[in-house]
Structures are given as C-alpha cells and as structure tokens.
Image (cartoon, rainbow, N blue to C red; front, side, top):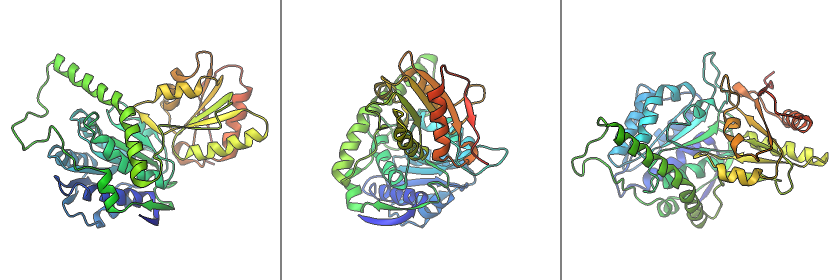
Length: 387
C-alpha cells in the first residue's frame, strides 16, 4: 500500500486500474469513455494506466460510452465509465438498460448541476434523477472513501446475489479536483479482494437471447428479480465490509453514518461532503445546549429505510438538507426520508448549495435554529448561500 496525494478523480482511476488488472486471469477489462467537466481528469488518468488485458475505448458521446461498457460486460469483462450532469442525462437510456440486463458495471458519477443555464459546480440532481434506474448508488465524503468505494463496488456488483451496476458519486470540485492524502492498495491485496468475474449470463459461451421482446408476465418476472437483487444488497454489503476490513485493514463506510445521535432530539440528514459541514454545525449547536445530531446517508439505493427508522426513532424534529431540487416537490432526499421518521415527527425540507454554492457551518446553523423554533412542518425551503 502507498499513500499518495491525489484528487478524487485520480483516486477513482487508480482504483479502477487495480480492479481491472485483478480480472486479468478471466475476461479482462473494458471501458467506454467520453469527457465532461468535472470528471474528465478521471478518464484521462485511466487512459494513462497500463492494463495488461484491457481496452479503454474513446467514443463520441456518453450514450456510446455506456453502450461500450455494456458490450464489454455482456462478454464477461469487468467494466467502468465515468460521467456527470448532462452527460448522465444523455446516457440515461443505456443507464437503465445496463441495470435491466443485470450487468455489474461501475460508474463514477461526479455530481454537477444540470443545465441550462450552464453550471459546472456540484448538485446532486443529476444522479438522483436516475434513482429509479436500477443502479446501486453510493455517495462519498472524501477521497479515501471514493477510492475504497470503487473497489467495493465491483465486489458488490459482481456478487451473484446482486448482479447490478453501481454508481459511486462524488461532489464536483470539492472532491473531484481536491488533493488529499489517500491510501492506494497494492495489486496483490486487490487481487485477494476481487475474485475474477464469472458473469453467469455472458454471451459467447452458448447461444443466448438478449434484449428480446417480452410479454407482460415475463416483464413482471424480470422486475421481481430486479427488486430481489436490490433487497439482497444490504446483507451482501455487510459481507463486503467484512472482507474489505480483513483485506485492507480499514473500515468501509456504513450505509448510514450517525453522529452524536445517542441523545439527539433533533437530527439533520445530508449526503456527500455536506455531512462534514453539518457535523461542525452540530458541535457548535451542542455547545449552545441543543440536543442535535446528524445522519450521513451514504447509500441512497437501495434506500436504507430500516436503518434510518432505527436512528430517527427518538427524534421529534428532523431537517433534511438536500443539494438538489425536484420542482413541485422539494428536496428529493427529504421526500424519501419522511416515511422513515417517527410517526409524530416534524420533517422539514431544506435545500442549499444548489448550483455549487458554498455550504458553511453558519448556514447549517441557521437551519438548526429554524428547525428548533418551528411548531409545524412548512413548505420546502431553498436557503440561498451562493452569493
């Protein structure tokens, strides 16, 4: 293992190259790539890596990038791509197809605001628009977690109880272009952690039909199998955590990470790098005597409702901080957290940092004060922090 000063984009590429080489005794590795700010550095670095049994294909669009990954994966190769924002939107048809074909592709999604108007800074709306696509979604807080999540994503996706693609999400620029000391494992350790991929429904072994016309009942069966695979993810993820700890000597983050929740009467729920700012604001509020805690939602799909329900059982006031907006509804994360709160709890939606505004502890402090003073849930609030 080496410790390197790298951006999250480069940490992604290094982890991907390690996973790619780990499949050299099987059917190798293949990637379709197309640049879009702010993920371009990731695929540029991947193109520089030497992968003994692999191909990185430069294509003309994001739609084609996922199509290439699907082709490699259907043939039994380990596969990866990266995208962001409008690139993900253009890729959407094949994002759904990859999951419905049950292909264990890993994609790094660098969260960026959808345009127009054009904005290259962080917003979670691009990946959250794909919440119904059948992909597992993991949201990262720092560069080490990005690196670890890419490796874990392959182990999770390729498990025969799952066989679903995984989207590893990181915040644009806050992580993608920020250098942090990151432990990069050696190839021998990754080889132990990632067994060669043996895709049970790969093509070329014997005649198979893929993508044919389904009758209604056959589609019902396919969707039931897809849901069963998602239902298996939490248990398989725990096994992946155990293996990760045994192999690399450090913990892989839980689906939900609590902070100062032991006696909390109020809770803030957030995702990605916002969670670190929230923890700082929680500490400041505790010094003022407020019993507030926080939950970081790391796994958004499958949605960890049982874990959230357990952590939120005693909280009468819950504030959900979204870095996204669903027009006509409010925060997307808020809309899904609400059923997991206690039956008589007030669950208020706050949206901040839309379009990449700098979310600071003082901004979160205003949310805590508003939540503490409320007598009832109000309309979703957009907190303007971008000035």
